[in-house]
Length: 282
Image (cartoon, rainbow, N blue to C red; front, side, top):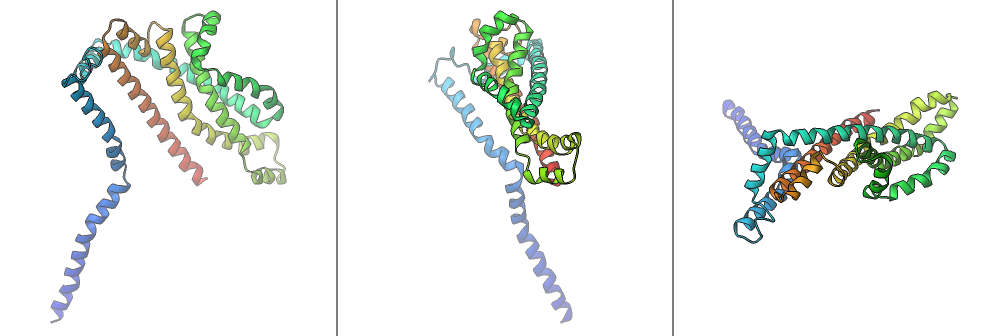
């Protein structure tokens, strides 16, 4: 009799464990990144299917919209010939130089205007004018000043990265809580100590937040300037495909541009999450 009573709870508990497993699995699946990526892949899959069907059913002219398999073949040919990597390497080197120069100058401008209202009064109007002129609008003037070589591309990339980063750093310095400033005054911290322990952490968090937008702007500016004034690079490869009327090459380069931009965004997003967690712990 006692043995039967002892067995009943164990049997009942096993049933409870089995019933809880589907719920726990669904909770894990719901809160994991798998569901996020699955939902995000629905629209690209539908778009790819509509692309395939529209070409197969002759809803559009195949000369204007090549089939997906032709674009994939063109992408493999560009890769196997080395033409894709050689042009992409040029573009990546340009983005590295221009983006580095842009964010370095943005740090200087953002900190200067954030710390001094006098500097802000002098520089902010000029900065706003530069910001309101699009990248393409600077190309004719810069061609006259620096020519059509690498300096043109790097300056325009740097300008595109400069604007959002400067605004982020400027706001980060100005948005330092007043309570922290008052604590620093109570402890009579020196100028360098305030800058190191108060201004730099606030500016750095804003700097990390501005990386994503700055890099996206710089990448878009690079493609634009290579489309208009370049003899090499991923943007030029797209123009070359259009000139010889190989739209499969054009679409292949569009895919590469999108994938590289997406990779940039993912990397910056991971960096932001890491430093956001660090800031929360601090």
